[in-house]
Length: 385
Ligand SMILES: Cc1ncc(COP(=O)(O)O)c(C=O)c1O
Image 1: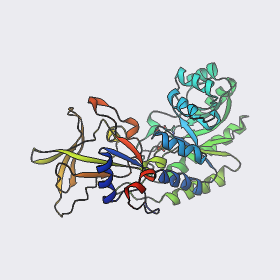
Image 2: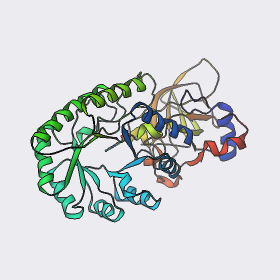
Image 3: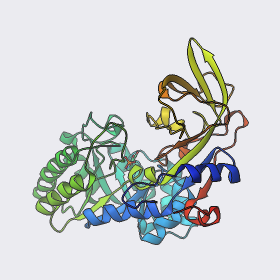
Image 4: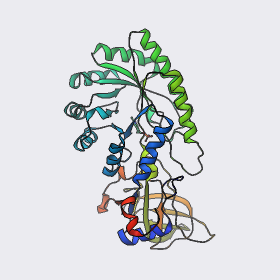
């Protein structure tokens, strides 16, 4: 693998892997996970990274992130207990779901998780009842319509409510320690982060004037991965964010919650054409992986995946790609340009590690795609890493 680029299998490896393991197959590069983590640490050295495990909780990714020293963003009792069972101390977790379940709060108490976010008065009461010693961050709404997935429609307190909510948390006896925001997933410019930092700076000052000493700023996730037709320069983005942090938040603990950026580029899917038809004058290709599997990201993450066929030929056709289930909803792409395909052809889907297998199901009796770790098996395939 060329380390300057993201993890993408060569044709020879795809063929050998499909022959040995069958398809659909997910190939995970732990070196890419490490490279992604190190990139964030290089350009934002002050940021304590809490990997948002919802993006991909594969055990090998978690083990790698544990070894690298990462902390973790969790959103449910299940995620808390998964990490607890792997030996991760509660101190390394933040329960970053602004609306928590009783089970989630009980898991915090049992596993020693005291960091959490909130964005409403009702949440303060819930936290106080079960985790009265919690350290809480006010989750602020940052409008950003340019994000690929705008989380601020569902979460975040309005700027005008922020100070009074922080004061309420203090009155309730909670350790109100700072502010968190999430600019939305796959944000390809520094501007929304800088906008969030501007508002947070004002609120830090207002909080201080009101007698609160805030000490933590959590800039959330949202860091982007390469996608066709979208241009951005991540190191440049991170440098800009880092410079503003140094300018406006000296001495403050900075936290970040990347999900997609850590795992998105670390997984390749190999899938096969299992059926060909022509409907309404267009070719239809049925794959052995569909919307109920890895391509669940088409629905839940609104992601348009790149399909690579390795077939020669100039001719391109607009085709429909459907999954293997007996459900007519199970159609991933319409009008996607491709060379003509046949049953048995292999397709490679690079950069499909985030919000894909994490939301896959076994609907209709189709098993979830098998995972292999690239660095464990590439030697046995006699192909170049
Ligand atoms: C609170 C929180 N933090 C972090 C993340 C990870 O975001 P991303 O994958 O865009 O980095 C999410 C995503 O939903 C989130 O809700």
